[in-house]
Image (tube, rainbow, N blue to C red; front, side):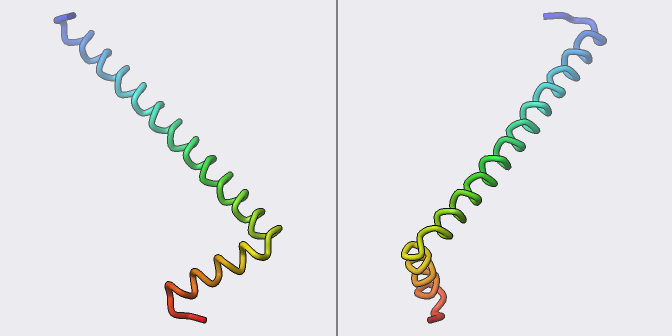
Length: 66
């Protein structure tokens, strides 16, 4: 383990940069997966009226709106 201060500071900054890059990448991937799930779900509901009716009935049952 290095003991001089400059090396420790550079290692800490490098570690912070790597952590920041990993979390920003995970955030983008999660956003893309969520967007894809919404698009696929919308397509399924658009092409399957029985599933859409079932979903609307379930939402109506939870909210009390019929």
